[in-house]
Length: 446
Image 1: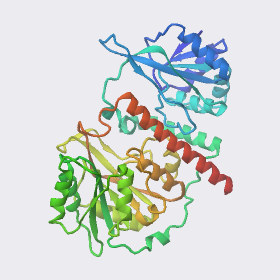
Image 2 (image 1 turned 120 degrees about the horizontal axis):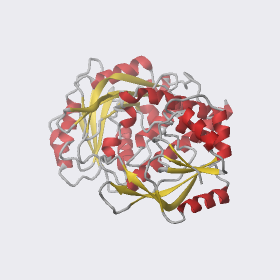
Image 3 (image 1 turned 135 degrees about the horizontal axis):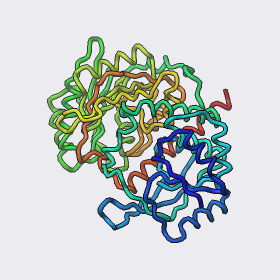
Image 4 (image 1 turned 90 degrees about the horizontal axis):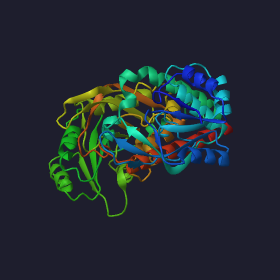
């Protein structure tokens, strides 16, 4: 079996073409890392499954070896699906490819400097679904020992902007090929939702559970906002059965702040999505519902007004701001400002199917969102409604920093294990799959 190596997932189309030209057998193996060691008969098993399934591409679970540690750590990957469009999808470090399919794919594409592998695997997925073998067939050396929370923002680092542009070009061509591409600037009418009467103009929504260390900071940041007359706002805090003193802290602040609305959830399952729905359905919810996580703060006292201004001017369904990463004390952390520059008015709602989030903080046109609601889940709920809204409605952006995203050890994504990361990624891929199907159906009726 021929083996070829690439320096990770960022590579040129020229690299792929060279490999396709040198490959001579029915299949070849692509290594994305050095130092691969096989479980006995692992290579034979990959070929066997590829033959069984007539796969154009196959990948398998693996063991990881941390530097200085001889104990292998099981590190499974997840099944591929049509919505697995993010460019950092983890296939592991060994991929079996059908030579004929690779040659056909590279003969039909243009040259990319960074997105050669991403472009190839999207094209191969249109020839046949990549096959995941849920068996541990090899060992790889773990090179990136950072916690999951430290890796989370790699894809929006401004230093990677050229990479992002190429990745967007690839996914856009793929969406066109599968009938899920959305034409720019074509939106549904929205004026009736703006005409809905509400108690206040805007509501800051803070869902929380067991956040005694940070909840006061979040609430006081929201209460300290300044809005111009005739606009008004309130703060809605939804507590999901906290047991650490969080509920008592909220009640203390509610006793002295008339515009603080406290919602105590019952004992049934709510998660973050359900807590958002409780705020949206409250009679005191404003026309615009603006996010503030219970461990974050607003950048200054103008954030709410800036969201109001953007909604009023742009007449959009959703507004997304820009944020900076900070530590728990508010000191900036690299890469600093995160503005999701990969979002553009022309192509953002298509590119949204590639990236892992739309940014923060998020604001929603509440009367419209009440026709959709959040899924009752504790992860990906904001991404789900963002995809749904942008399918038919306009999203606008605030490019200045309006939010402090505080990183600390108790963030929900600070240090996820492989099982949690796989569960989260599988769910977001599922959201993309459903959205892809919905967009294909919508396009067929136009």
